Image (cartoon, rainbow, N blue to C red; front, side, top):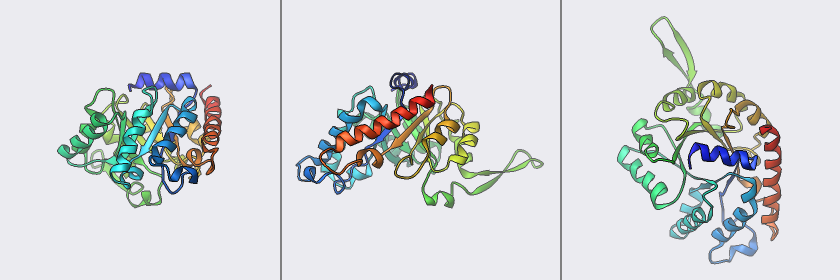
Amino acid sequence: MTRQQLVEQIQQKQSYLCVGLDTDLTKIPKHLQSHPDAIYEFNKAIIDATLPHCVSYKINTAFYEAMGLKGWEAMERTVNYIPDTHFKIADAKRGDIGNTSTQYARAFFEAMNFDAVTVAPYMGEDSVRPFLEYEGKWAIVLGLTSNKGASDFELKQLVSSNGEEHLRAEFLYERVLRTVAKWGTPDNLMFVVGATQPEEFINIRSIIPDHFLLVPGVGAQGGSLKDISEKAMNNDCGLLVNASRAVIYASGKEDFATEAKAIAEQYQFEMKSYLC
């Protein structure tokens, strides 16, 4: 999916909601748990219910890989069920030496029909480059995450030098944003920025004003949609705000899809007010 197509979907739906399909067999309604294809049946019902209210789905691959072949097949069936009108993200956090990343890119962009893959930038440009070489596909690079461990590295200060007389401090995540932004363009490169770091959004937009941001952490993790929208939206919206548990586990009963639809609709309604 191209940037223009994504922006058009946001404008048409008046939504920038991404529904996270972090599907855990132990958490889906009990009446589905004995189904021979329980994960796919649950995902299918969630997709049918939320399709009009979101523009994207994010599949956290760990929840599927943990189930072995059966989980991988459920993931493949799920991504194939999502229509091409919706932006499909493999939340896989890949990133390795160039020839290995090339195989990861083939897996998610060729063997499966994902539009984007989340990528860890620690190993540098050659580990990210293969994901940027597919037309209409995206790398979503980890920028500033919402987990407690972000302080271990991402929020460590570095001293950069623009000549011996000009020293200034910057966070490691700022260096990552500035550096990685040069590897791609706003048409094929996004960044992950956690919703629980709202004080950093204004600064982040000063560094990467045009890129889309994938923002997890709204809902169950306590991030504020209002704060994100006011501080991080750009002229094209520039946001995909992910909600996972708050939507897909809105109910543990047989009405789970109806309740998921209601929560997604609430997000869409609020998002519409920020887009106007």
